[in-house]
Image (cartoon, rainbow, N blue to C red):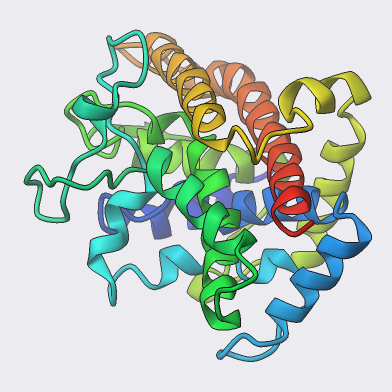
Length: 297
C-alpha cells in the first residue's frame, strides 16, 4: 500500500484555503485540459496556440498551464468567486435559474445570472467572437477551460448549507480535512500517489501521461453521446444538463458518506468515489474539446 504522505500534503494545502477556493485541484483541471487539447482540430489548435502565446504572464504552450488561472486570480477579483459553482439545493430535482443563479459576492441576491451555468456559455460566446480583442478572448479561453472542469465537480452543483461540503469536517487517511477538499484533490492524489507541490505546482508530464490514459479509455460512442456535434449552438441548454447530471452525483456523494466513519471507511469511500471522478474528468475533457473546436471554427 502506498504511503499516504503525498496525498496528505495536498489535502493539508487545500484545507487551509478559503472555503470557496477550488473545484478540482490543479491536477484535475490539468487532466481536463489535456484531454481536450488532444482532440483539437487543426484550426482550433492554431487559434489556441496563438492566444496562449499572448499571455501577459509569459507565453504558454498548453491549456493545462492556464487551466487553474481563474482560481489564482480570485483574491484580486473576488466578484468572480460565484462564477465557479451553482447552488442547486441538494434535495432538488435539478437546476432552476431564478432560484440558483443570482448570488453576489457578498451573499446577496443580484439581478444578473452569476453562476457557472450562466458564465460558461457567456465565455464560450466571447471566445468564439472574432471581433473581440485577443486579450479578451484569451481570458475567455482560460475561463472556458476552467469552468468546464468546475461544472463537472459534483460538489460545485449543490447546496447543502455547508459551502459545497467545505463545512463537512472529516478525517481522511488520518488527516483532518473536509468533504470538498477530498473531492477536489484528495481522492485523485490518493489514486495516483501524487503530491501537490509548493504554490500548487505539480508534475505536468505525469499528469499528461495519466490524462492520455483516461482519454484512451473513452469510446467513440461515449464521445458522441457526451458532446453532440452542435454543442456550442446549444451550449445554454447543454450546461444545464451537465449541471443536473453532476447534481445527481452530488446527492450520492452525501448518501455514501457514513455518519459514524468506522475504521476503513475512507478506503471503501475511495473505491466508490474514484470511478465517479474518473468519469467526470473524462466527460469534462471530451466536452471541452468539442466546445473549443466549435467556438474556434
